[in-house]
Image 1: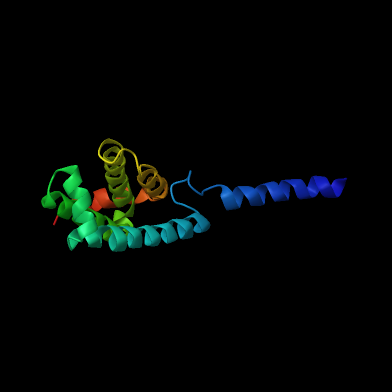
Image 2: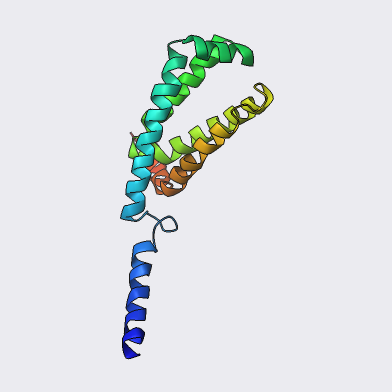
Length: 155
């Protein structure tokens, strides 16, 4: 019985050390940091290659979708540019949190567009992509203070 009593506090303290600072603390734990970094890379590739590039080169499938929306080609190029900029910014540590938040806002717009224009055919897709984006925004929120300090720094 004394072994169980002695081991219980040690096991509890180990659990506190490994999980104590994952997403709740000022900076994520090593495991959370690696997970977020992998998500950032995967989402950057997702936003750059199959999403932004077809819009930026004016691929027929992208042009057809944006014609149905009714804003014209300029809007397709704008969204493609925002997606590409967001993908690049996801890979820059100081911009990753803000970029994930901005891309989440873009996905909220995509969700509304899917519901209103396309009758909800692929409405779940932007929401599914938004979940890891919001996790990145939350996990990288400590970079926001660094970004503000860089912007406010005198030249």
